[in-house]
Length: 193
Image 1: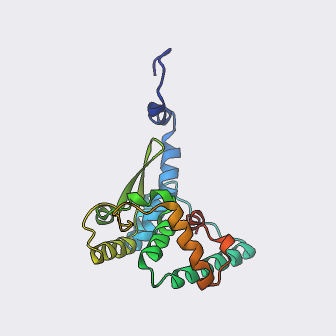
Image 2: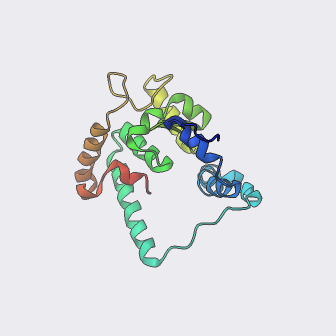
Image 3: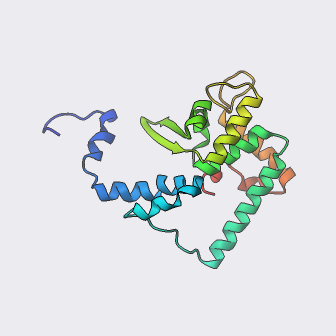
Protein backbone atom coordinates (compact mmCIF):
# COMPACT_ATOMS: atom_id res chain seq x y z
CA UNK A 1 0.00 0.00 0.00
CA UNK A 2 1.22 3.46 -0.83
CA UNK A 3 1.37 6.24 1.73
CA UNK A 4 -1.31 8.91 1.70
CA UNK A 5 -3.69 6.90 -0.46
CA UNK A 6 -7.20 6.63 0.87
CA UNK A 7 -8.49 3.05 1.04
CA UNK A 8 -12.20 2.71 0.29
CA UNK A 9 -14.52 0.54 2.37
CA UNK A 10 -14.73 -2.07 -0.38
CA UNK A 11 -10.91 -2.42 -0.46
CA UNK A 12 -10.44 -2.95 3.29
CA UNK A 13 -10.79 -6.77 3.24
CA UNK A 14 -8.21 -7.05 0.44
CA UNK A 15 -5.83 -4.62 2.15
CA UNK A 16 -6.01 -6.39 5.51
CA UNK A 17 -5.51 -9.81 3.91
CA UNK A 18 -2.06 -8.68 2.81
CA UNK A 19 -1.01 -8.61 6.46
CA UNK A 20 -2.49 -11.94 7.61
CA UNK A 21 0.30 -14.53 7.97
CA UNK A 22 -0.12 -17.66 5.89
CA UNK A 23 -0.20 -19.98 8.93
CA UNK A 24 -3.18 -18.11 10.39
CA UNK A 25 -5.10 -18.40 7.14
CA UNK A 26 -4.30 -22.12 6.89
CA UNK A 27 -5.25 -22.72 10.54
CA UNK A 28 -8.60 -20.95 10.03
CA UNK A 29 -9.38 -22.76 6.77
CA UNK A 30 -8.41 -26.23 8.04
CA UNK A 31 -10.41 -25.82 11.26
CA UNK A 32 -13.53 -24.22 9.78
CA UNK A 33 -14.17 -24.96 6.10
CA UNK A 34 -11.96 -28.03 6.24
CA UNK A 35 -13.80 -29.44 9.25
CA UNK A 36 -17.18 -28.78 7.62
CA UNK A 37 -16.03 -30.41 4.39
CA UNK A 38 -14.84 -33.56 6.18
CA UNK A 39 -18.08 -33.77 8.20
CA UNK A 40 -20.08 -33.59 4.97
CA UNK A 41 -17.73 -35.91 3.06
CA UNK A 42 -16.53 -38.58 5.53
CA UNK A 43 -15.06 -40.64 2.69
CA UNK A 44 -12.34 -37.92 2.39
CA UNK A 45 -11.21 -38.23 6.05
CA UNK A 46 -7.66 -38.99 4.88
CA UNK A 47 -7.21 -35.36 3.77
CA UNK A 48 -6.66 -34.39 7.42
CA UNK A 49 -3.29 -36.15 7.45
CA UNK A 50 -1.94 -33.42 5.12
CA UNK A 51 -3.25 -30.53 7.23
CA UNK A 52 -0.50 -29.09 9.38
CA UNK A 53 -2.74 -26.88 11.56
CA UNK A 54 -5.85 -29.04 11.94
CA UNK A 55 -6.96 -29.75 15.51
CA UNK A 56 -9.36 -32.50 16.49
CA UNK A 57 -12.31 -31.24 18.50
CA UNK A 58 -11.67 -31.17 22.23
CA UNK A 59 -13.58 -33.44 24.59
CA UNK A 60 -16.35 -31.45 26.28
CA UNK A 61 -17.00 -31.42 30.02
CA UNK A 62 -19.85 -33.75 31.11
CA UNK A 63 -22.22 -30.88 31.93
CA UNK A 64 -21.58 -29.34 28.48
CA UNK A 65 -22.21 -32.73 26.83
CA UNK A 66 -25.49 -33.02 28.75
CA UNK A 67 -26.60 -29.54 27.68
CA UNK A 68 -25.65 -30.20 24.04
CA UNK A 69 -27.63 -33.46 24.13
CA UNK A 70 -30.68 -31.56 25.43
CA UNK A 71 -30.34 -28.92 22.69
CA UNK A 72 -29.99 -31.57 19.97
CA UNK A 73 -33.02 -33.46 21.36
CA UNK A 74 -35.10 -30.28 21.16
CA UNK A 75 -33.86 -29.70 17.61
CA UNK A 76 -34.96 -33.23 16.68
CA UNK A 77 -38.38 -32.55 18.27
CA UNK A 78 -38.70 -29.42 16.12
CA UNK A 79 -37.77 -31.35 12.97
CA UNK A 80 -40.28 -34.06 13.86
CA UNK A 81 -42.99 -31.44 14.43
CA UNK A 82 -42.16 -29.92 11.02
CA UNK A 83 -42.52 -33.25 9.18
CA UNK A 84 -45.69 -31.94 7.49
CA UNK A 85 -43.92 -28.74 6.42
CA UNK A 86 -41.00 -30.06 4.40
CA UNK A 87 -39.82 -26.56 3.45
CA UNK A 88 -39.49 -25.41 7.07
CA UNK A 89 -37.85 -28.66 8.17
CA UNK A 90 -35.33 -28.46 5.34
CA UNK A 91 -34.67 -24.78 6.00
CA UNK A 92 -33.94 -25.53 9.67
CA UNK A 93 -31.61 -28.37 8.63
CA UNK A 94 -29.86 -26.05 6.16
CA UNK A 95 -29.25 -23.35 8.78
CA UNK A 96 -28.00 -25.94 11.29
CA UNK A 97 -25.74 -27.70 8.76
CA UNK A 98 -24.19 -24.58 7.24
CA UNK A 99 -24.29 -21.90 9.93
CA UNK A 100 -25.85 -19.37 7.57
CA UNK A 101 -27.88 -16.48 8.92
CA UNK A 102 -31.62 -16.80 8.36
CA UNK A 103 -31.50 -13.82 5.98
CA UNK A 104 -28.86 -15.64 3.88
CA UNK A 105 -31.14 -18.52 2.89
CA UNK A 106 -31.74 -16.78 -0.45
CA UNK A 107 -28.20 -17.83 -1.43
CA UNK A 108 -29.14 -21.50 -1.09
CA UNK A 109 -30.03 -22.02 -4.71
CA UNK A 110 -30.49 -24.96 -7.03
CA UNK A 111 -27.16 -24.04 -8.61
CA UNK A 112 -25.42 -23.97 -5.21
CA UNK A 113 -26.86 -27.38 -4.29
CA UNK A 114 -25.56 -28.81 -7.57
CA UNK A 115 -22.07 -27.39 -6.89
CA UNK A 116 -22.03 -28.33 -3.20
CA UNK A 117 -21.28 -24.78 -2.14
CA UNK A 118 -23.02 -21.42 -1.91
CA UNK A 119 -21.53 -17.97 -2.38
CA UNK A 120 -23.05 -15.75 0.33
CA UNK A 121 -22.83 -12.01 -0.31
CA UNK A 122 -23.51 -9.98 2.80
CA UNK A 123 -22.28 -6.63 4.11
CA UNK A 124 -19.82 -6.18 1.27
CA UNK A 125 -18.18 -9.56 1.80
CA UNK A 126 -18.41 -12.88 -0.02
CA UNK A 127 -18.24 -16.15 1.92
CA UNK A 128 -18.19 -19.64 0.46
CA UNK A 129 -20.46 -21.99 2.39
CA UNK A 130 -19.88 -25.70 1.88
CA UNK A 131 -23.03 -27.77 1.61
CA UNK A 132 -22.86 -31.39 2.84
CA UNK A 133 -23.68 -34.00 0.17
CA UNK A 134 -26.69 -35.31 2.07
CA UNK A 135 -28.11 -31.78 2.35
CA UNK A 136 -27.49 -31.11 -1.36
CA UNK A 137 -29.42 -34.23 -2.29
CA UNK A 138 -32.34 -33.23 -0.02
CA UNK A 139 -32.35 -29.66 -1.38
CA UNK A 140 -32.36 -30.80 -5.01
CA UNK A 141 -35.10 -33.37 -4.36
CA UNK A 142 -37.21 -30.72 -2.63
CA UNK A 143 -36.65 -28.14 -5.39
CA UNK A 144 -37.53 -30.69 -8.07
CA UNK A 145 -40.74 -31.65 -6.25
CA UNK A 146 -41.85 -28.00 -6.44
CA UNK A 147 -40.67 -27.45 -9.99
CA UNK A 148 -37.91 -25.06 -8.92
CA UNK A 149 -35.31 -25.43 -11.66
CA UNK A 150 -33.04 -22.51 -10.75
CA UNK A 151 -32.60 -19.76 -8.20
CA UNK A 152 -33.50 -19.70 -4.51
CA UNK A 153 -34.94 -22.90 -3.09
CA UNK A 154 -36.76 -21.44 -0.08
CA UNK A 155 -39.37 -19.24 -1.75
CA UNK A 156 -42.88 -18.04 -1.01
CA UNK A 157 -45.84 -18.50 -3.36
CA UNK A 158 -44.85 -15.19 -5.00
CA UNK A 159 -41.55 -16.77 -6.06
CA UNK A 160 -39.54 -14.42 -3.85
CA UNK A 161 -37.27 -15.70 -1.04
CA UNK A 162 -39.05 -16.20 2.28
CA UNK A 163 -39.07 -13.23 4.64
CA UNK A 164 -37.06 -13.82 7.83
CA UNK A 165 -39.93 -12.65 10.04
CA UNK A 166 -42.15 -15.28 8.41
CA UNK A 167 -39.55 -17.98 9.11
CA UNK A 168 -39.33 -16.81 12.73
CA UNK A 169 -43.14 -16.93 13.09
CA UNK A 170 -43.36 -20.41 11.52
CA UNK A 171 -40.69 -21.72 13.89
CA UNK A 172 -42.52 -20.25 16.89
CA UNK A 173 -45.72 -22.04 15.78
CA UNK A 174 -43.80 -25.34 15.76
CA UNK A 175 -42.87 -24.98 19.42
CA UNK A 176 -46.25 -25.99 20.84
CA UNK A 177 -46.44 -29.10 18.67
CA UNK A 178 -42.83 -30.01 19.49
CA UNK A 179 -43.17 -29.37 23.21
CA UNK A 180 -40.25 -26.92 23.16
CA UNK A 181 -40.40 -23.58 24.97
CA UNK A 182 -40.99 -20.79 22.44
CA UNK A 183 -38.45 -18.51 24.12
CA UNK A 184 -35.73 -21.04 23.27
CA UNK A 185 -36.48 -21.16 19.55
CA UNK A 186 -34.95 -18.62 17.21
CA UNK A 187 -33.55 -19.23 13.72
CA UNK A 188 -30.20 -17.83 14.89
CA UNK A 189 -29.88 -20.59 17.51
CA UNK A 190 -29.80 -23.22 14.75
CA UNK A 191 -26.49 -21.79 13.54
CA UNK A 192 -24.81 -23.01 16.71
CA UNK A 193 -25.91 -26.66 16.72
